[in-house]
Image (cartoon, rainbow, N blue to C red; front, side, top):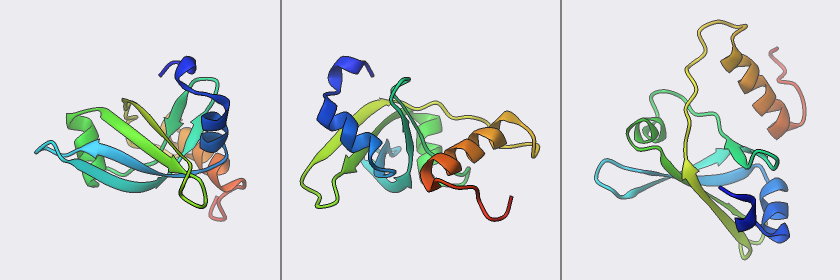
Length: 118
């Protein structure tokens, strides 16, 4: 994504939310839609979403990295759609690896606090 495709209203909508609908491509070409929590990095123009290995969206993205995320206003009438290719990080192998640190940062950015089980 390039910054010129975002106007200020779209950026405000995306940055002001943490819930969206992730669209991936099923094997037969139809869209797979999943409600997700996300963090948007306005500097890097990237979305971060936590997904787990056995989910259809994970399998879809491993096969075809094309993805879209739809974010709407509270009343549903204003919306933004961002499109791009997904990059999947490896599953956490150790409590201190980079994937775990990324998940902690993602949780904090979405929830605004630490998880109670840490």
